[in-house]
Length: 464
Image 1 (cartoon, rainbow, N blue to C red):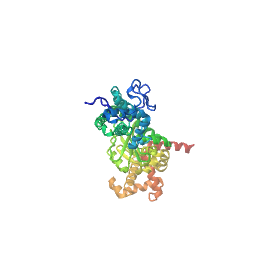
Image 2 (cartoon, helix red, strand yellow):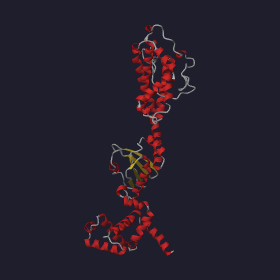
Image 3 (cartoon, rainbow, N blue to C red):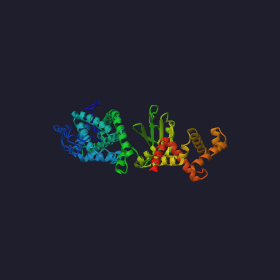
Image 4 (cartoon, rainbow, N blue to C red):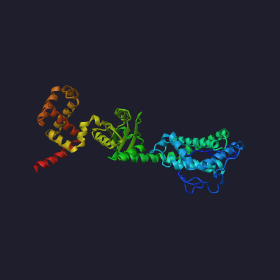
């Protein structure tokens, strides 16, 4: 902090608290942080503090301020360590060993030194301004929260001012009441330097935001692929700002050209944070559900799908390390979609998920159960398949199926009876019904081509 630019100030008198900046060995403003503070080259005004005059009453407030600043400069790292302790005590972000900038002690040492030197030498005012801007730029590039940086900046300023007042009183330079005349000036300059820091931060943040988004995208992609790496998950949680043990779900969106189109923006859901990862024709949404139900995410996605677009949603998983599994399940859910414009929740389609998880076995099941029906004439085959499908969807009610198909109930029953004769299964037996239903669903999910391809392989094996 300095006073040269404030109207009415005779000379710089203030202490700006700056909690940051690794020092440069070639810095003309003085030694690097971590090196014992000494007088900068050619700056006799910051030499070791002289003994106090015999009578403190003879000192003016500005002279008293000078003596106190010289005293703190002489204390060097011991005093800057006190400032660091105060920052860590009052700013939780800086007390956290993971979140706090690792260069905090070094940068505080340099910031305090530059500040006190500028309070004694008007020619060093520019160093304070340059340092404050560099601090704002660096913290923006590191993606440190601006509120936390400003909080630490002001706490450091308060501790430096307390050190000046204490030195003036305890070390015999005079009474603290004599410094009241310069206190207002000091805090005006502290506020001004906070503005300089914030302006520099915001200028960089505009450009850094895009780089940060890219970093988040890459980390998110790695998390979705990583397995059994707890250390990486912990680091990724910090970068993504997600709780490692939170409740998560994954949605996978597939858009098929020429009409398919993924949503332009991530849906906004109160109490839920959603991150987006794009890869090829598919987009993945990772939702931190918090205490919200999965229904809230599904509702936000609907009506998202349109022509050429399908969405699969995983069940809820616990912990960031389970995101790869959640993505796998979202992919399975997506594969259970039977048409465009559909949102598939795997927890509501677990039998279908089993079928698409092993398409080879599913095709084998469909072939063995439905082959006699598939070998009928096309018109006959489609009539029987349509009737079976409607009957299943209507809960096994021949009456409801007949109403839907605009035919008589007995017609439905006759077709089902013929189905039983062809397949050798009885729809009244639970195990037969499960087998038939799974075979029918496999045919719908995989398509006739996959089942017929399995038939060719099966025939070759039998002939061989």
